[in-house]
Length: 246
Image (cartoon, rainbow, N blue to C red; front, top):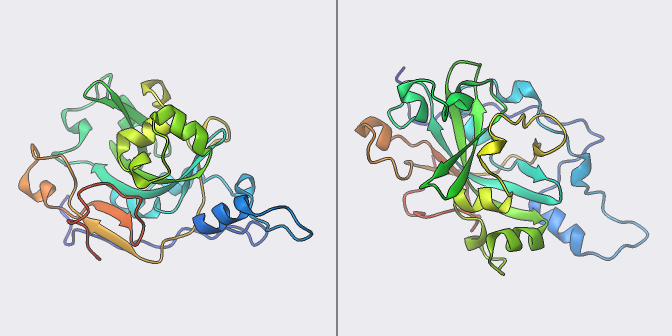
């Protein structure tokens, strides 16, 4: 189904209960550096709610920008999602599921809120969040993140002793930082334990642009502005020049 616009603003996701404040990434990093005192900041990621199953039961083009600012958590490693690509949806010539259900693509056709992890070039584990109802065949690729917690584990997994954006600016790097493999496909991201997606702050401004690496697709899909990133953050992948305000 064609859209009249290439980008659609979405409604803000429901706010968490007042007793569970949503800190920004900068607040969390600052709180981790502060020494304990009589009035420590109340910024615990362990108290942030896991996004519910219902959050993911929407069109992938709507889900993609909503995932910006949310947190990926696996044990001690916590990443904030800074860039996503609405890479797969029905009637999309770039979609992995365009040829139907196969052993590889079956997770894409599951219910929204599950992980779909595939190997790129047989090397890189790419994390996708399945969207929409079961049987639709849609997902969102997590393209870049910012480190929030577990930096030493991230550096060890990545084999890079750096805290610069190169550490997590790319989907293969995100999968490696989280220690993922294709065995994580079908994992429910809305349940506690293993890999989870926690609620997080909505970005003040975002950028949009065409997707990357889909030259094989139809022109209308190659040129669609279905790549989304948080404006002002250095934690996004190349090419940056194709991103602009919506």
